[in-house]
Image (cartoon, rainbow, N blue to C red; front, side, top):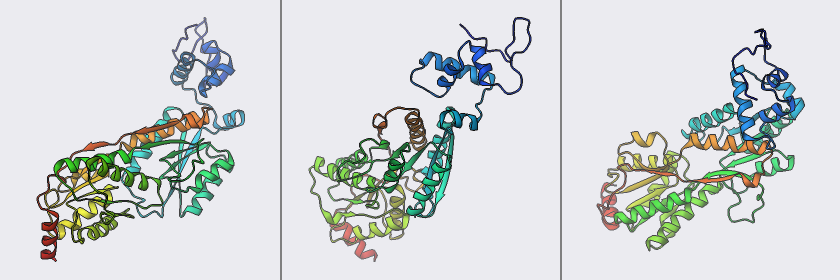
Length: 376
């Protein structure tokens, strides 16, 4: 049967058959389908064919059908809402990726007629309380967990409650895999760090430093591993003196970079695990009289907007934060609708954005040390 999608639907005498708010039974009658079939199609059940689901969704859009949220919650046990809790006390809470990420997640949820809820917490302990409260008050059917830790209590909590969730990142670095049933979406930061080292090696650098992030986060270890893999692939030794960790802010980046530059043989290039730390170092080094891209080469990671406006523009590996938000919301809703969590895992790549902050070494490591001594 082919549906007539004019609105409002009319009977053979031309009289409107739908008035006011479109109800489920009116939508079903208009399509010539049972209420159960229409309901299951709108809720994404896998036993409904894609063709039928597309037909029902199109009719619902044209007719302006919207389910009553409280009625749907009673019928399906779902409120058609996903949520994310942000720790407002994190030192880099205002990371510019957040706006694009949330825009992507909200857009994906909205396109499926779901709601995205954003809440804040003031500590890791408070985050667990907020997650529990949102679920117990039936304000969310599942959660996106950003910035995963090596040992992440949020995962244990939601698993114990049987609540669907998806990680933005991976977890359990160096530990037995206790989360084999967990969904995740991540960017291969380790590949980006490896490629950053190889890029610098190809330019002629042999003393390449690394400034990592907080080791409590899983991504910090993966990116450090990528740096080490890059050195190995380039045939360069791994020198522990050239590695600093714990930089999450511009101030951290400047401080950790100064430690590397104070070495007897400082690096002629530094790879940073985050753009914020890289930008902090660049500004500090320039204040000391160094020329970024000539005296010292710098590569970051994230692709935040400030990289384009820095002088020189920062070479970085860019993450499409909006696309990440879209994928996480979509995969989570698929999980809530019944797909196996372990089947919902995706790993994407970061894209190199070339700036002017890296180039062939203009000074040797010893010459760089002498210049630093002269400047100080």
